[in-house]
Length: 85
Image (tube, rainbow, N blue to C red; front, top):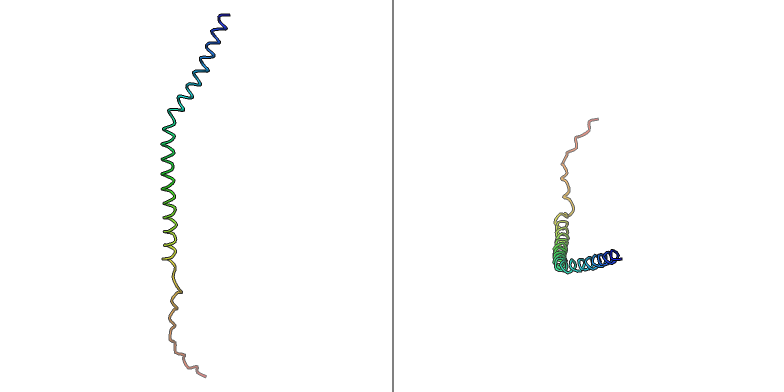
């Protein structure tokens, strides 16, 4: 009977210890998670800014690379030779 009582106390100790460990780890990780979320938000803002700049530069590049009609080629002035009959 005494062994069963000892095993019961060990079981209760393990359960309470694991619950306390999970709660303790959760409390320590809250600050880290908040810092990571702030970092992610900053990086997302930078990416959005770079995507916007990329779109602007693509439009500028296309605008500058467009040309009008090509210049017509010059015709050579060939004098027709008289045909001998």
